[in-house]
Image (cartoon, rainbow, N blue to C red; front, side):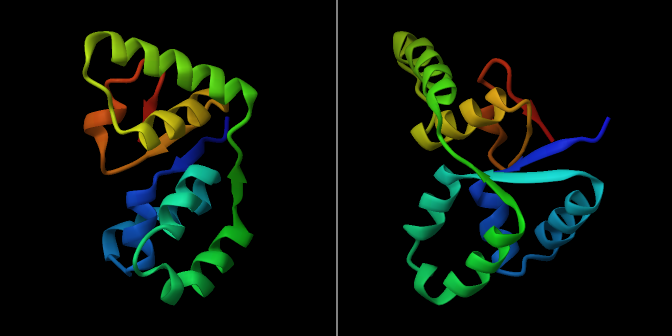
Length: 127
């Protein structure tokens, strides 16, 4: 079975900055299987200070991979995750909750440097 991956924002930021480890990782994953990212990641990249300068390369990259939307089932999953953490008062970053919900809903392995928040979320597979 071919693996499928969801690239988190921090991996893509390093990739676009030319950070060698992330460049090699993304290239390797593209060769291994299906690679996705999310509209949440697009938002995070677009809101960054360097986006206007990096827009052409980001746009080209996003034309090459599938960007998953935040759909009804993802919203419901994110709500479930949020409620669980709100109850105990230890919320992960809201963007990470949304990305995790999308990855879980699509059975994707999250590729991130931020394992701290993601590993606390039930059902998330990490690379």
